[in-house]
Length: 145
Image (cartoon, rainbow, N blue to C red; front, side, top):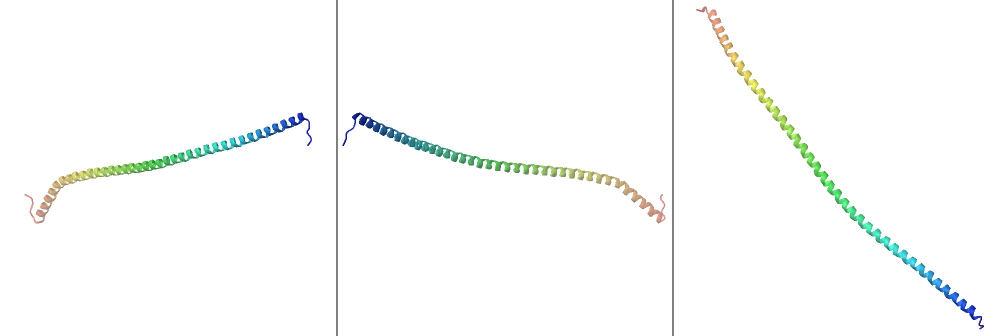
């Protein structure tokens, strides 16, 4: 085996070591990048899971609010229907009261008119009876004395 110049050999050895260190450094850098990428991916996955969890909670809250709103709306509709029914019943009662009042006034007028007719009929009946008596007397030859 031939031994060359020791300076060249040392330089070559230093270059080899330097290349190995450079290669190692490159591998470490790539490993760091991969590890960092994995950590970033895991961090993003954690963020995504947290956002999904919050979205589910928000959806549950929204569903709860919607169901509450539907129940409130249904109750409000029932209240409106009840108020409309009460208003219709009150209007019907008012119409009935008005009709009863007019009927009572009409009956009172009929009673007054009947009493007036009776008052007018009594003298007329006396006149009719008197006239009938006169006619009877004339017919049978009795003249009024």
